[in-house]
Amino acid sequence: MMAQLERETWNVRGILIGITALALAACATVEKLDAAGDVHALLIAIRDGDQATFDRLVDRPALKREIEDRLVAEARKDSRIPAALAAVLAPSLAELAGETMVQPGVFRGVAEYYGYDPRTKIPGPVAISAMLRKLPDGRVCAVTKKDGPCLLMFTEAPDGRWRLSGFEGELSMLRIKR
Image 1 (tube, rainbow, N blue to C red):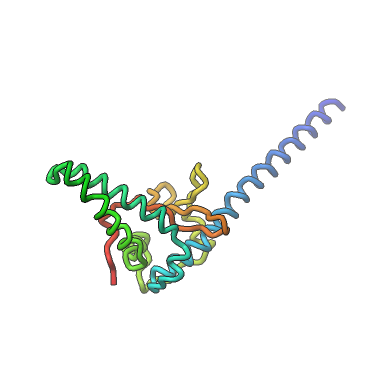
Image 2: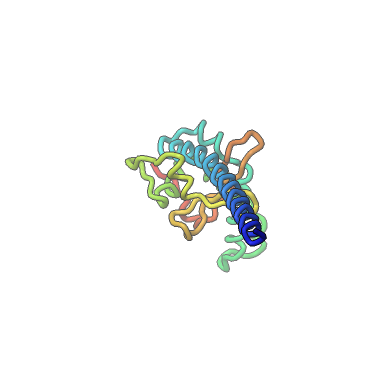
């Protein structure tokens, strides 16, 4: 009798652990699915050159700041540019470049890296959610394969939308595509 009670207790514990694991997995999946809807809309905006939708789905200040910081860092590392000149010119050039680079046509090259060109049918949010990775800081990033690098980072905004907030690819990928 005692052995049967002990087995039933372990069965109940196993079921509770399983339910807890499923609930936690569902939360991560729901979060990625929510983000995937906005990523899908952003991909369509990039493909179609839809500036208004692109602007709604991009955290322009965060993305611009990241691009500017990276451009300044690259300028300071370039031995052909004197350090004093880089310190004076780089921030202004980075500001101009950051503003110019945060456009749908520029991110078309990044979309093509992910396999989406103007002729490609963009998959729905469920398929896109499988290509999103949840990061420890609460953001999600887009990958091309399960263990692939994160190039595009998305942050959930107070209004519940997921906005493009970071780019970790090569800056050379950011070119104007027509």
